[in-house]
Image (cartoon, rainbow, N blue to C red; front, side, top):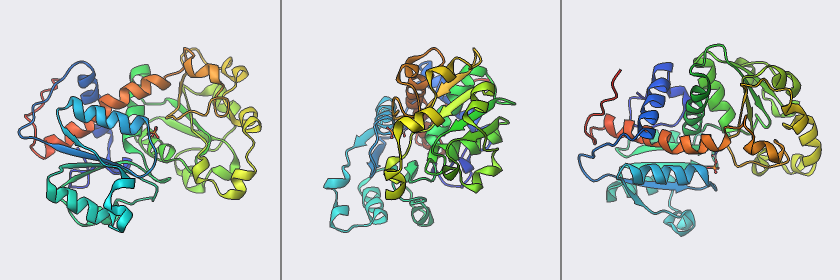
Length: 313
Ligand code: CP
């Protein structure tokens, strides 16, 4: 499934259309009760160097539901506080018997020196700085597929802090590969030129009037410069770039609202809209657990650590 000749998932760039559709099918099978059989005990460690609720919890839930042993890790209690590098930490846990490391880190592409070492332990990127968030992107594709049954020609508007969003990058990559038409909106200064390869920068109102999927992004306060943070006004942002109760009236009936979370209610989206009939925000979170089961099962399958999975046609 994965295109780096190893058993890791670090970037949406590894995934072609066939791989994405396979992951959606496998995640759906887990949602419908698929079980796997491990050939031997398997152990995972979730190393989160940035805060997380959804990703961390759903990876741990996925591991436990697959029968994998989850070994606890707290960055603040680890020997990394004594100067051990991430690479040496991974070599250490590999030597002790951990098969799979799920890592979130604030540094973009933190995984490159790790991949260069050809460890036997597998790596799943649970978010790297403003780089990529491939497991979020796959669960988002599952959620869109549940709503529409296809991707070809779907109009997807991604609104907000594009510059600092790993979700925007991974989703733009997969959506365009799958044949969707992507457009972006938000402050001009938060739209890096490199995103033009995926689609145009338009107004929030153009997206609201036309999109099948309105995908909102959290303002990434932790990645803003001091100057940007001091100049940020939440209510002004909500009026100019947020999904307000006035704007939602103009959505097509079939349009879905997505947000990777955590949501700043009243900033990128009016609080009442988080639970509106258009919203798929909590469905995204449920799908996340099944998609992470699928990602892990595929890696274990490639390593011959589970009995073959029969998915049918
Ligand atoms: N979507 C997402 O990555 O949320 P968390 O930061 O809570 O994991």
